Image: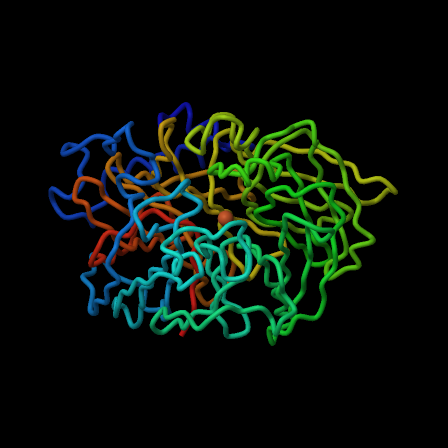
Length: 489
Ligand SMILES: [Fe+2]
């Protein structure tokens, strides 16, 4: 990224801070000394090769791996912070039969790295034993129950590790060996879907989540489970049609939904189209704010211009305003695929709740697309200072992951670790240290397409631009994936 484009990232630009950050970014890009000589230096290769005759999600490091392996005492470059004692577990799409209609639909595979005492103790990868996997990697009709890929995320709540595929039920996983213990349905209370992005309220330990569905009256359900993992409420959120709702947000007192015009298309589903959703801006778009935990009858909606948002950074209350920081797309499934990130931006939504009608405004925080946002989950629903992101390069034929981005919402400074053209990170999951906001670490799998090697990169969350403080060499390639979680020991 050139300096001018970098400058465009800054809101309320502080020139001195900007120069300092860009210098750090340049230094980080060129002086990352953790990589072995010849392993992915820019001189040894350009961008990742691409075969236009194959789907982008079945080639390069999107291609699945077929071996479930275990390894111990992994090679480490640099120094793993001693405070990191636990397991990083990341989910992703890894089609067991080598075929998938879309990146979103391959069988879920988990990758786990155990860190302790400054050492990388072990790696393991395993498929989630779903109904789809048992069916040869083919979904058996409309998803539901165990018939789903469970490939999007991993959630740790009330001592349970769960995986989600957005639709259908979650699976419970044994963190120690990634074995699938079975479907998890909250003692029969959950019958439809479990979002990949539930929220844990740090004040109560309660799990707030939702699921969307395709048929009947319960097209969108909002659920709460208590800190023991017992389902304590389920309510129907009134919506007109089934839309793809990937995430939502909470504040200390609100639940925030957004309904964008990516509509489930029953005819496309029956006809076997790869993605049974279509962009239909005539449906409109709206943001709904309701009391945290209910009742849903108190939800109020404000109409906004059509958009699509997979991921928020976080949300919080500021007086009568509900602030939601989001990774914003102008549309989705509108002819172009995910590789087209043009027009994307990091935005801040502000919904004023004081009057009888909600009012809405927005601002652009960074006028390029950062995605796969993460935040310090000790601040879920509370004012956050920081957001961390996966950065992509402009490459319309594929999604070309680059480094890790950071926005400091207090200073307005954005910074980035640029790993070089041959290396590709993904979601950077924040693991807290012992004290305040941003004191902690970011974990992300990084693939070098020249060395054909994956590492788990560990970055200082307060100094992203300097690049990894440590890299753990993986015993096999780790395909690009979606979301991870950290389970402290
Ligand atoms: Fe997601």
